[in-house]
Image (cartoon, rainbow, N blue to C red):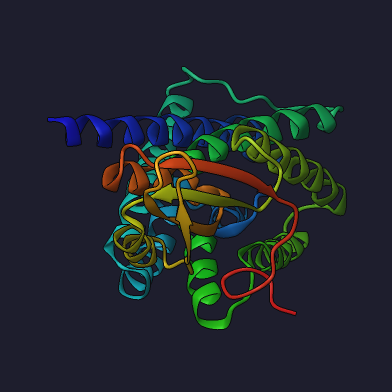
Length: 287
C-alpha cells in the first residue's frame, strides 16, 4: 500500500505536467505556426507538412526510441518515461477532440505573435518542468541523449541543444523565418521555467550523504542511476561511530530519484545538497 502511494505521488504530477504541455502545444504552438524541439518538434513538422495529428505521430516516433532506451538503459530508468510518453499522447488526443468539438478554441494571434510565443514558453516550460521534477520525461531526444551520454560521454545538454537546433532549423522549410525567431523566444522562456520549477538553474547537483550504509547505497546508486560514486571514510566527532560520506553528482532530473534511494536504504542518513556551477567528467562534459 505504501509503495503504491509513493508511485502515485510521482505518476500524478507527471500526468499533470504532460497535460499542461499538451495544452500549450495545441492552444499556443500549432495555431500560431510556432515550433518545438525534440521528437515533439518532428511531430509538429509532420502536422504542418502532412496534417498528421500530434497524438499519433508523437507516439509512433517514440515507440522505437523507447525500446532502444529500454534495452540500453534498463527498466528502472524507462518506467516513468513510458508514463510520460503514453500520457502525453493521450492528452494530445484529448485536446484534438476538444478542439474538434469546439469546446476548446485555440489562441490564434493576428498581429502580436510575441504574446503567443511568451505564453507558449510558459505553458511548455511549466509542463516539462513538472514532468522532469518528478523523474519523468516525454521520451524522444531525452532517450537518445541518455544513451549517447553513457556511451560517448557527451553531456545531455549539448546533445539536446544540437538536436533541437537541427529540428528547428529544418522547420524553415514549412514556416517563415519570423516564426522561427519567435520559436527561439518560446524555447528560451520554456528553458527558464524548467530550471525554475526544478529549483535551480544549474545542470547538476552534488550530494554528500553521511551514512552507515555507504557500500549498499553506492551500489544501488550505480545500478539505478548509472552515476559514479565516491566513498569517503568518516567518524562522528561526538559519537565516535565510523561512517562513510557518499559523494555523488547527478543531473537535476535525477535529484528526486537519488533522494528516494537514500531514504529507502537509510532513513536516518544526513544529506547535504550543493549547487554545481560546472562539472566535467564521465556522464557530463568532456574536454
